[in-house]
Structures are given as C-alpha cells and as structure tokens.
Amino acid sequence: MKPDPLKALVTGITGQDGSYLTELLLAKGYEVHGLVRRSSTMERSRLKHLYADEQINNKQLFLHYADLDDPTTIRRVISKVQPTEFYHLAGQSHVGLSFDIPESTCDTTAIGTLRIMEILRDQPHPPRFMHASSREIFGTPTVSPQDENTPVNPNSPYGCAKTFATQMTKIYREAHGLFFCNAICYNHESPRRGENFVTRKVTLAAARIKSGQQKSVSLGDLDAARDWGYAKDYVEAMWLMLQQDTAGDYVLATGVSHTIKDLLETAFAHVGLNWQDHVEIDSRFKRPADAHELLGNPAKAEQTLNWKRSVDFQQLVHLMVEADLHTLDANS
Image 1 (cartoon, rainbow, N blue to C red):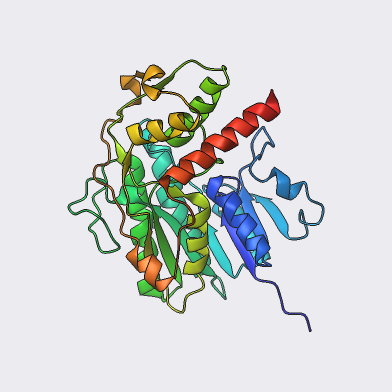
Image 2 (cartoon, helix red, strand yellow):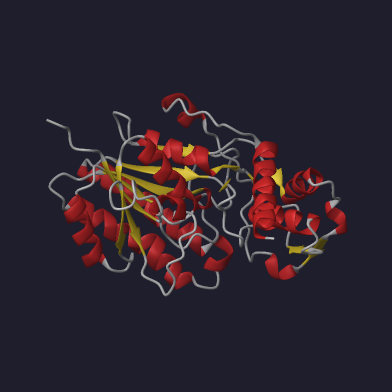
C-alpha cells in the first residue's frame, strides 16, 4: 500500500520565502498547499514556473484562496487538507511601512497568527507549526549578538506585532504541548526579494545604471547595519526545524554585520561602477526608529539542525546583481 504523502500548508507562498520553501518541499516529495489572497491580479511571478508545469500544478501544488482575517476559510482549508506541517510566512513584512499602517500590521502579523494557532489547536491531529519570526523582536537589544534567550525589546509596530506572535507560539507549545516553533529570522535576501527592500533596490539600481536605464538611486541612512543572509538557506533551516524530535525556537542569521555602504560598494564594484557617483541621500527613507546592533548568533541552529549556509555576503550580493542584469537583458 502506497504511504500517504507528507502534506505542507504554507501561508505567504507567493513571497520570496514561500516560493523557495515550495521548491524545497516539492523536491522532497511533499504535497504542497498554499494560501493566497484573492486580488485583482493573478500575477504570482515567483511561483509561475511551478504552476505552469502540468506535472506539478494541481497534482503536487495546490493554491487556496484565504485571508489572515478570514478564519472561517482558513479553518475550512486546514480541515480539508489535513497538513502534517504548517509553515506560516504571511504578514505585512515591511518594517518602515508598519509605522504608516500600524493597525493593519498588527491585525495580520499578530492576530492573524493567533487565529491560525487557535484553528490548529482544535484539529484532531495538529500539524507541526513553524512561525516565521523576525530579528525585529529584539529592536534595541541589550546585548550583541542576540540568541534565543535574548530579551525582546521591539521598537517598531512590525517588531511589536512579531513579538506578540512569537511569544504566543511559545505559549501554545508549552501550555498545550504542541509542536510549534519560531524561526527568528534576520534579514535574508535573494533575487526574489521585493524591490521596496534596500538590498534589491541597490542591486537593481546597480544593474540599471550599468545598462543605462537609470542614473542614480535615493537611499536613507547609509551607516545602518544588517545581518544579511540568503533566503534559500533560511527556508532549509525552517524545514529542518520541523524534522526534529523536539520543538524549539531558532535564530537564523549569519553572525556577520554589514552596512548599506558595504552593500553599495559590493554591488556597484561588481559592475565596475563607483557607488558614490550614483547615490543620493533622501531623509524620507530614514525610519522614525531604526533597529541597532542587530546581529544574530546562529550557534543553536548550526549545532542542533546541522545547518550550513551556502553563500557569504559578497556572493549573495553578486548573485542578486547578476540576476537583475540577466532579467534586464532578457526584457530589453
């Protein structure tokens, strides 16, 4: 008798992390179900290569319409699919934007996560659950680098919402005995990163300026530092978390910090340009409160999950610039 396939349900499946995670799960033989918001456009470019494949679409990969503020529909999908693993990646994920839309940020990122956990708790066989948390829960940290035991201290609406969701995930694990985990993710980038995030904004600008399609790029605080890793590596760690004997929380980071100046230097030098000739400072891009000294300690993930990263900072920036150059060339 053929065994039932492992079933994964993924929120945020059309995003950067969701698309990489979907590819990983499909390669491992999973049946993958994704929750997607109904919108006026059907454009899902990060998944296009998958649902265009007749051997995958509606055979191994299934998309369901649902919103995080619609628990009835989510409950219906979960009851129908009966997933063995649940990866919760969805939510308003732009930190700067959360200052402009704090209510909707908290409703989707905090309460939306709670709604899902309540539904999962009621299932006869609750799936293993992974919540994509964020370095922003540490906000202005008291120690550096941060690990799983560092006190939370958010300084943005997004960070506050993620802190709520992270703490509730832990409470559900401890109070209800559920296999619920937090992936405390530091910045993770890729060619699939949205263009409103600074890494993609810089790599795309370098590619466009090199190809003569753009002359300059406007940025905020060039001294802001981040712990930047590769999204494809981070989703592998998320999967590994749900394969353990015991549920837990893990910091996913590189342990190395770089400034936006470092990002500019690396990206523009790769195409033979001097970034200082093409960057303009715009105070509109400076956040009301920025996260300081956010540097992750990934020791637990490396030791417990045997997690290894595949690229360093320079290699990551180079592959992003090359991908943008390729796309520009293909569209010209």
